[in-house]
Image (cartoon, rainbow, N blue to C red; front, side, top):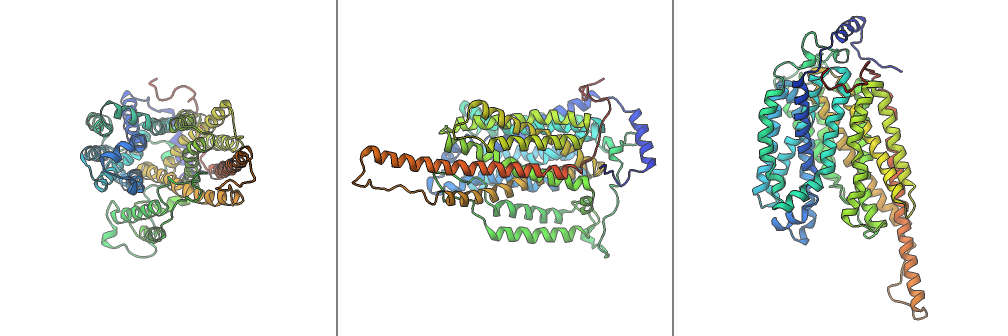
Length: 556
């Protein structure tokens, strides 16, 4: 099956062939710009996870006592909210106003939020500052992806996007260690303070290196076949005439509706930090149904409004293009499966292996460290053999790794732990480049940043929905398996000490086996979810760049 774009006519093929023959060399400016964007995305990704290891110190400074312990989750949820809801608006602004000015705005917001986090001592204001910081950090991701796509030809696109995706994943992996290391030098406030000079250094470099005006792919004579799509076709207005407030170049009302829908899902499904635990079998993610209702109403209003806007935030007709819809569906499934491993592996370590928190984190790194490696490898492979083949391979590898994890015995060897987690991480990394390149290639140069933002949001939504749903199921499943397990509180008089100890040991072993069964089923379900992503991957483009076996982003 080879699904091509609507504009894939004979004339387009001839034009693309002519362009391919005269493909320009990759400039040093483009390489420096890509390196700068990777650094910016890496720094923003660090801030997602760097607070995890310094949370006790933050609690002390913000005067959060044990009675208000649940409020701490908002420090993480606030960043998730800002990161998610800002992406669509900033993505569209970058497509309309240009990558360079919006990169400046994103870095400014990130720097401002970081500066506020240094000085604020009130939890509510601190969370608000984290939202501002995340809005800037989240905007950097789609801007970097689109800017890189602007400056590199189609045949090098997947690798470049894989490198940027790898930088983002590496930031998330190293964040906890980065935060702990900086905090040990002075205070937890240092992890936010260092962002200020870093942003000050990055801003003039980005301004100098990013191209003003028309994007690389949109300039005459530099268009590749992958970008020759009908990206200026007006959307259907549903048979009516658009009102005056529906004619702006940027759809701010639509952005507000989408932000409300995303916020409702994130808040309604909880922070995603509570899940099955043998020591707290009754815990589960609390679903806030009013927020879910608000999210549903806002989403319906968003769809109805977008259909009548002359310049919508997101063109809904893009979802009629198989590659665009498939990339978003696949990335949502990736998010749902990946978050299971990110959360459950440390809990697996604490609950069943008796590891410390540090040991649990080191166990998780065996999964996450391979994701950026796989992202670079997958980007290169996608440019060499095609987006579809690489994506299918990545999904199957990730599913196979999770299947191996689901079959862990009660006491797996270190070789099993390392092998299975590294295989899973490699698979998740392989799909980053094909998904990013596929969705960008399906919309054309004037919607690159918007599409990059949307596909990233799809992954975040998949994470929130997947974790909330499976964690609630896991708690119920554990309660069923442990229903018949009971240990008398007081030793019966007819039992000796040895017999009483044997009863307690048997109950502990049964409880451990019940938790082990639930964890195994968790990863089995996650393996099925990621295997299902093979279906939308079949609809990815069959791009295959010729002659890209060399390192394609270096000058030649």
